[in-house]
Length: 70
Image (cartoon, rainbow, N blue to C red):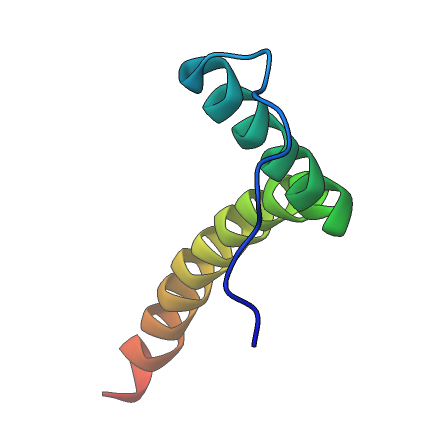
């Protein structure tokens, strides 16, 4: 049964430096896991704006069409 790691020699970094370096490494690995996320987010904003504009246009066209029917 694995009980843990044994420290062979003390590290050269302080606890704060170690935490910052591990945070940088985790962020880098998350970015490497999906480098297209920034592009997807940027395109997603434009898609939502398009959908909002299309909804307004469709709503106004629907009102103009049914104005004479009612």
